[in-house]
Length: 187
Image 1 (cartoon, rainbow, N blue to C red):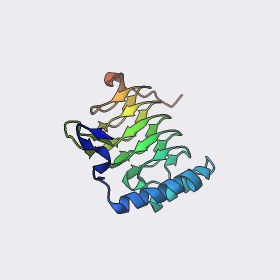
Image 2: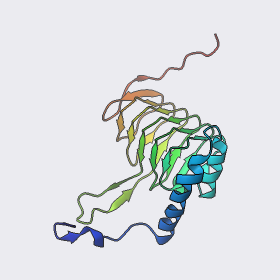
Image 3: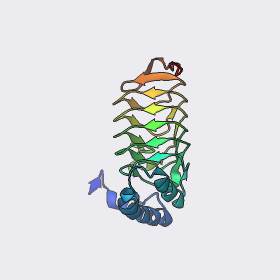
């Protein structure tokens, strides 16, 4: 297949042979052992991610149907959660702070392509999600984004730019609509 006379199949991969082999082995483990670990045993999945270089707390909650591209680029704090059907495309590092939940069907996209170049090169860019955040169901979080501490991103929102601390943000692109105020738990 060609694009303006450039054969796409001739484009060099930006990934090393070691990276490619690591992802092959990881994909086999993710499709079998990782997925077969019963749901409540999050610490076992965390240990598997650590075996592949992830900096994942043993208190993190990683559900069995999450898809992780390269666990060696994933960092998760205590009680950070990746729900089922989250796609964690961590070509670049993705960091998820303690007590943060990434809800189902969310896509964390750690790379884009430079559309201004004929070869359409891959451009990895890290994602940082602070502590005490909630990224609700079916959100898109783009490359290079930082979601600051305490922020809530409403369902089906798309995050293309950094979001401030302790806000509720919604829309495409996600924008703050108000402060996030926690209720007193003592009743």
